[in-house]
Image (cartoon, rainbow, N blue to C red; front, side):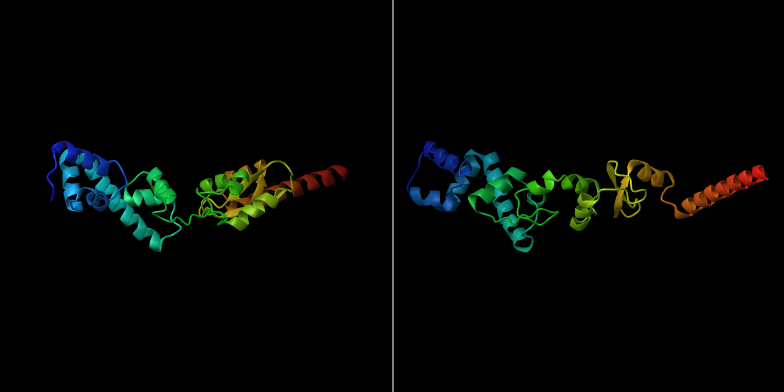
Length: 212
């Protein structure tokens, strides 16, 4: 094996840690082995060598994960392999990994969590606030024009079951707040109906009594 000066070893090490060229490819240019290139990098640039080694290990791990989870979100993948999300997109752009990313609402291909169409409809805001909401329910949200209780056409609000998070319908502000004030308790609502019924009967009795 040829003898190289520390200056040349330093240069080769720098090329390895600061580029995407493999140790074996660099080694073939200088008549040494890939192990030698890595040893030089470890000696002259220990921190950068460890960073590159970690990135290489993370890439192999990411490729393995994507084989079984092709639809995993880039931020989730980045956490699993412990690299920045930007690195995941860099790998994708370089073609070293394939991301089959779909909008988590409608399933259309996208590079982000939500596609542009779902964001334009503000569906992503409902999904963030109410994770249980489905695509079909969001379509109902868009198609609803009046309160499901009183029929009001005032601005409608998303009503959901507070115990399960499930979508129930679209209500005007008054009806939505009314259910909330009654804690969604059907027994309380029935009691209120009976109370109002008694008051109405008493009013009628008083009117009749006055007439008599």
